[in-house]
Image (cartoon, rainbow, N blue to C red; front, side, top):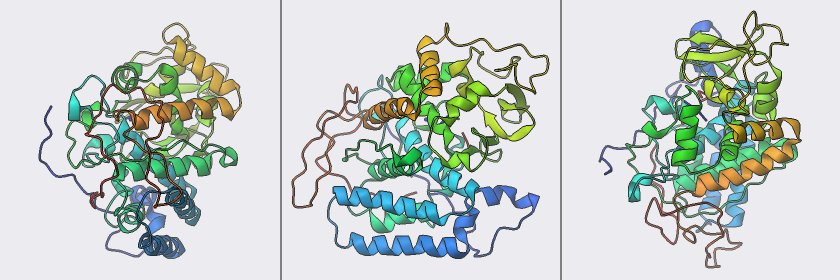
Amino acid sequence: MILFTLLSMSPLIVAACPFNASNDAVPLDENHRNLRRRLGSLRVGETKRQLQNIIDEQRERSLQTSCFSQEVYDGIRVNIAAMGDAILDAGDKGHFWGGIVRLAAHDFMDFDQNAIGDARLGSDGCLEFDNDANAGLGDLWCDTCAFKRLYDEGYSPFMSRADFWIAAANAVIAETSVGSGLSLPFLWGRVDRDNCPLSSGRLPEASGCTEVEETFIDRMGVTWTDAVALIGAHTLGRGDVNFSGHDGTWVQNDEESTVFDKGFFTETVNRGWRPRMTGAGTDWTWGRNTGTMMLNSDICLRFDIPDGNVQSCCTNVNQQGCGNRPQCESSATARPEAFDAFEQFTNENNGAFYDAFSTAWVKATENGYELGSLHALVDSCDVIPTAGPTSAPTTGPALAPTTGPTTGPTVAPTTGP
């Protein structure tokens, strides 16, 4: 799974949190490797205490808050940054950062511009957490998970889940971008739903660029440049064999997976990625470094590979590890806009990637909401909010627009791609 009719009445599933009944550290043996990766360090010791303090302090502040103001938005960034600082394990930190961005992305990647009315979906605070497409996200969004508790106890009375997920993802990207240099635009007013049975089926598989095109271009209505920029968020976090079946970081190590930069693009081009078969199908690795991986849906943006498990080329035969595999052809002919975007993001500084990501993120997170239905942040709760400008290419609302956020119910995304 990549980094994105009538509704049934089935309830939204709330994930069970790992280590729910224990305060003990996870055993340092191979049998518990999966649990260690699943944000285990957030449940013990000083990290657990610091996270609890952040939640307690925000709960107190929320008693004096009645609206979604600029101060509240800035406070989300402060809280998310503090939570990240409390996580000392680099793998868990990357999982935490990447999981928040993935949570917001899975919420907006189910938008379908070709559907009618409510069936269009988009950013609506609704995921099917028990579906394999969202495997691992329940380690972040569960009733006793620190991130969800921060929302439930500190923000839910005056903010929708959908707005919180996007605001938190914006905070992650601001904090992890080089020099904290990427501040994404934000409008509020998204409306939550509790049932979204069409959602998981619209999230792209990792089989190749046919899935990328159907999800991003055909349904979401964004460009190939937008799609390449959004998938560049894979620089954060990692895949986990226990969730998606694909294991490793997209960049060189856990430490680099905590930085939002153009690393995904430079790694794709500079390494000699070769296909390998896993229990979940083919993915790609390089050299002897089994701690890294790419998906078909990553590689195909820059190289012309077929969909599916039958892969035979190497992306850079000048690097060790390719064996006798031939050089993969570039995607310059098959997907010229994706190739050009990839080249730009690789060869220029982070600014080119950051600018493109910002444009694509606004489109994706505002898809489905009519112009004027989302609001600019106000400085004070005494100020009546006005509709903010939007560049999202929408043709109709996914939900009935409201003049303010709904109270988000306390409901209950991986590292896995």
